[in-house]
Amino acid sequence: MIATEGEKTEIIYFQCFQGNPYRQNITVKLLPTRKGDSAPKRVLKRLQKYAKQARLKPDDELWLIIDVPEWPLADLQTVYQACQQEGYFLGASNPSFELWLLLHQRNPRTPPTEGQCEAELTRLLKKPYDKSNYDPRLLLPHVDDAISHARRLHTDSTEPWPQQVGTHVYCLVAKLTAS
Picture (tube, rainbow, N blue to C red):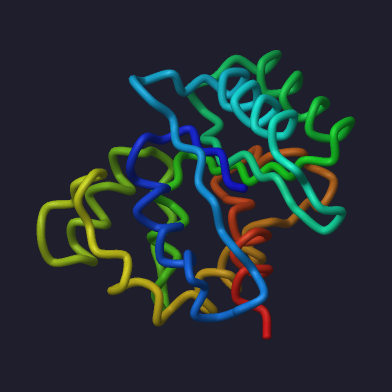
């Protein structure tokens, strides 16, 4: 189960893994934000509610996919601690999920702001980037590049979320694509 901060961007990307073409033994379920209710604590509450209602198996994984910069440090710490206590996984991005999308190329730029990431995606996709309407199939052939680039940016394995430009989304995608 993947609970996302975003209403559309992350959902569009992770829908490509439903009916997983990489690993048939994995089922991907998505729990998107609705009506802008995207604060990390709210994403966590949705995932906790799902976990209480679902019949989880021991090998099920529950993931929170959030962005870092716009949220108070105390909120991020609370969410991280809850994830640690409840066995959830946190895939955070700094500055935004768009950085993860940008890493799907041979030599990506890694802009420090969401706006710069979106401008770079416009260049990469050769049309104006739209969070709610883009084709992730153009990016997926380079998913291994994205994982490698994100690993390289993840220089401190003890950090709960990227303190600098980086994304931990690769930890989830590496599991979804591992052979």
